[in-house]
Image 1: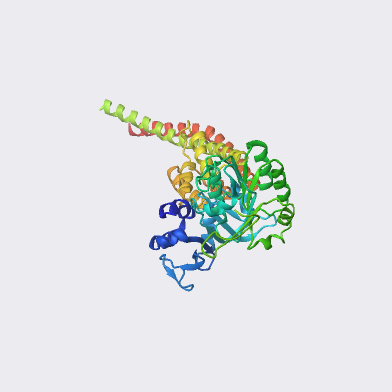
Image 2: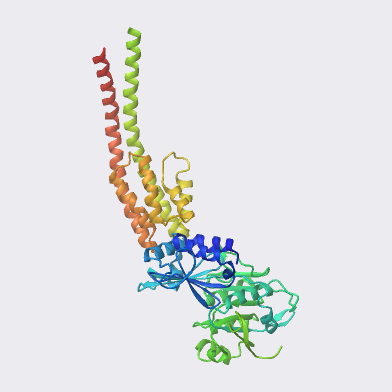
Amino acid sequence: MKLNSFKNEITDRLGGNCADIVYNFFQSNPDMLESAGEIRIRAGLPLSVSCRNTNYYVSSSGLKASAEKAYRPTKYEINSIFTRICRNSLYAFKEDIKCGFVTLPGGHRVGIAGKILPDGAIYEVSSLNIRISREIKNCSLKILRHIIRNRYDVYNTLIISPPVCGKTTIIRDIARILGTGNEEPDFAGVNVGLIDERSEIAACYQGIPTNDVGLMTDVYDSCPKDKGILMMIRTMAPKIIITDEIGGSGDADVISCAMNAGVRIIATAHGYSFDDMQVRQEIKEMIRNGVFERYITLSNRHGPATIEEVRGGTT
Amino acid sequence: MITLKIIGAIMILISGYLFGKHIKDDMRKRTEVINYINKALAYIDNKIIIENAYLEDVLSKCADEIYKQANVPQPFSSVSEMIYCNKQNINEAWETCLTDFYAENDYIKNEEKEYISQIGNCLSLADKERQSEGLKTIMDNLDKIEKKADEKTKKDGKMAMRTSMICAVLLIILII
């Protein structure tokens, strides 16, 4: 990610002291911006940035510092940032806030923590976690070799990965390649339906994807998976449906429905191994019914998206 | 000498007329400002409830559409600009813009200022229903103030004109 894009997509939206400090930090450490994963802003606690699984505290002058000397944002500052992230229109983000996150243009997800009201809405925000999203083209080529069946077809695949291992970046690139076509591995390019429940994959702005998700890809933005998959099958006739983080109640039924309609599914799930999936009711049911033909487990062992295991046939 | 006196008398009369008109115009402008703020609030309320649009867009459209043909001062476009540039949040931006708005339009009275100042708070709410209720309460109160101000304009406006003209005539008599 370039410093300019970082400024336009993240720090300009945050505003205030924290934005200036983080911008100065990456300006003086541009190489760290390439690998930056998260920016954590907590009330009364040190401002920190994580790069390659290492946490760095940042001083008010934008330099690496010890926890004692790091900049500590106030609660008022965090609430101001929160209001600005929501474009001063908290009402428009109410449902996202209830889910605990707001997505910035560019697909950067801002996790929110604080006092929770009985209806699930968060007010009096005390922590923000900005997860920096990045588009890495062709990062999924190694994985695609296990997913592509032939020039026109793919295997139903579940990508299993722990958090911060590049699941979303991988699935974005898979959508781009399958929806555009590719030479090696050879794929013709088909109609892809992308269900982007958290607006992270396509990072739609006013309904239009801001990330490249393929020339033949249709996107349902901020749409629940269960509704989105059915709507996509009925209206957009995709050959492949791609979605993130399955495992919620009702996911098994709706994915079976898609399979019955002859649509291929590529999905991701949180987990550290195939065995982890056996304890999750919805996914266990899908495994038992043979919904997926491939299970690809990723880790962060040799950098993001390291392939740990591929189950279900050889390629 | 007589010519000079006539010119002086005419000038006093014109000054008296202009002074009276200025007082009357201020009263009329005050009513207009309240009336247009009420129209703007109804517009904003509808846009938020129906379209769920972002506040910066709602405020900028409101300034364009409601105030398009009327030459009535308003704070909405500068607030929209301020929050669009992410300089301040809506509460702070509203307060900042109102300070300039009041300074430029000194005929706005404390009575309506109290309610106009609450608009920023109301727009910062996360709950659309509460926001709508808040805006409606402000509109009701401004409506009452507007009616009173309108009556006052009709009654006191004429009186201001007459009084200033009478004063001008008396001054002429005294001087001559």
